[in-house]
Every structure is written in structure tokens, then in C-alpha cells.
Image 1 (cartoon, one colour):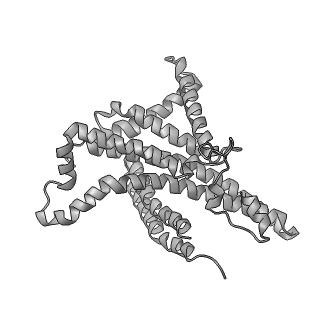
Image 2 (cartoon, chains in turn purple, blue):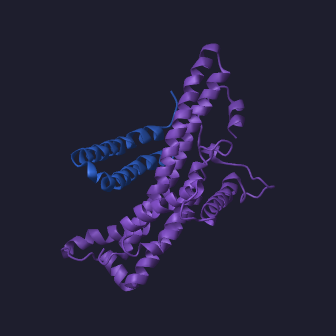
Image 3 (cartoon, chains in turn yellow, red):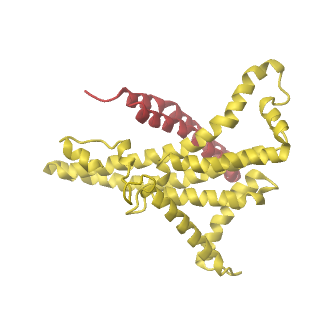
Amino acid sequence: MHTLLREASDGFVPPSSADFDFSPIFGNSILFTKPVLMVFLSVIIGATFFIASSRKAAIVPSKLQYAGESVYTFIRNELGRDVIGPEFMRFVPFLFSLFVFILVNNVFGVIPLLQFPTMSHIGFPIGVTIFSYICYHYVAIKKHGLGKYLKDICFMPGIPKPVYLILTPVELLTYLVTRPLTLSMRLFANMFAGHLLLLVFILGGEYLLMSGIVLKFLSIFSFGLAIGLSFFELGIQFLQAYIFTLLTALYIAGALADEH
Amino acid sequence: MTGTLAIVGFGLSTIGPGTATGLIFAAYINGVARQPEARSILQPIAFLGFALAEALALFGLVLAFVLK
């Protein structure tokens, strides 16, 4: 896509959102493109790794078992036990799959040959967000009943009556609109911005390499920065998978709490 | 000079989150410096705050692309 645009004009064309569009792999079906293929790949990678690591579980763990278990322990202790509280075991499988799925899909952004974070297409974060949205509402309704849950959201106890005029719409908006919106937008925007940042430096370096002799040497800095930023992105990708799972755990904890 | 005003808007929208991120980590460093054993409690809170603040800047970026 990008090279086509570049050939049309002679100057440097900065990367844009058009670089995120992929042509279909099979025929003309827009349903099956590179990001979709990568989602399937991420499920296979995640499942294979954790099945292999837990297959021959022993008291003295092998390196693979240790790697798999440390991820699990991290989610169970840091996000389950510390955030949700005594009932955390029910939610650990959900949080764990959420974390691994988002993490693998994000890290695709810096893996050579793939080099595209799946979550930089807004559809995928929305899909994942729907799961946690349904989850924390379902948990709250099951625990408190629909009536009491709505009452808790709309009329927070222990607050003077006139304040409800402002507080009730804000709270309703928070629970029903803002939370899922920010949850999906945060993941999407981080991955989108990260991929764009790498594109700027890599395509900029390529452009410098194709220009005059002095500029050729300058492309070293551009590529060097691109490599450095790739590692920075790796950190961001881990952080975003963690944040997404942490926020989901916090929302579930809020739904389980006796008073809102 | 050509370009879109949306990018200037994105630049402006980064001021707030940038300041916020600085304040969050300043508070985190302060807290850990005063009480090193509180690090494990403060770390998730600091990163949560950081992610919440950073997301606002990225909304600006997304809007800069949408409104082009």
C-alpha cells in the first residue's frame, strides 16, 4: 500500500492510517486478512505453549514448566488475589486467558516477519472488551440482583440528595459507556500509535537510504532509533496487556464489593 | 506550509497527559524513596495511573487521524 503511494509522488509520504489496511489473503473476502490470521495464530501459540508447559508437570519443574507457571502465578497473585479478594479463584482462568491472548497479539508487533500488532485494529480490542463488559455486569447482577445493582450505581449511599442530580448521570455513563470505551480505546490507541511510531522511523530511514549520499549516512540514526523504539514498544505491549487485565480485575472486584 | 490543524490539536492534547505522567511518577518515586518496602503496593497503582493518563494523549492521536 505504502510503496504504491510513494511511487505516485516524489516527496516523502508519512505513514498514515492507510498503512493499517491489508488486502484479503483468499480471493476477495475482506473477512480473512493478515490480522485475522494472526488472531488464529495467537490462539494456537498460546494454547501450545501452556499445554506443553503443564503436560509433564513435576514437583521439580523443568524450564518450560517454570516459564508457564510463573506467568500463571503472576496473574493469580498480582491480579487475582491482591485485587479481587477472597473469591478470586473463579476469575483466574478468565483473567489468565485475557492476559495471554492480548499479550501474544500485542507482541506480534515486534516479531520479525509478522510485525503488526493485531490489537491496532479497533475491532479486536472491542471484541475482547465485550467479554470483560459482560463479565463484570453479569457478576454484579448475579451477586446483588438487577434492582439493587442499578440502585447502587444510580444512588450511591451516604451522599446528600441534591448531588444525585449530577452524580447519577455521571455514574451511569461511567458504568455503561466510559468504562468499555476507554478499555478498548486505550489498548487500540497504544498499539496503533506504537506501530505508527515504528513506521515513521523505518520508512523515514528507507527514504533517507534511497536519497543522496549525505542522507544515506543519516539513515543509520533513523534505523537505530527504530530498533531502540522496538524494545520500548515491547515494554508498552507487556504493560498494555497487564493494564487491560488489571482494569478488568478491578471492575470485577468493584462488582463483587458489597457497597459501590 | 501545508498540514492539518488536527496534528497541532494532538500536540496540545499531549500537554495535560505529559504533565500528569510526570506527577504520577514523581509521587511514586517519592513514596518509594520514603518507604522502600511499599514499592510492591505502589507499583501497580503508579502504572495504572500512568496508563489512564497516557490513554488521554492517545485519544488525541486517534482523533487527529479521524478528523483529518
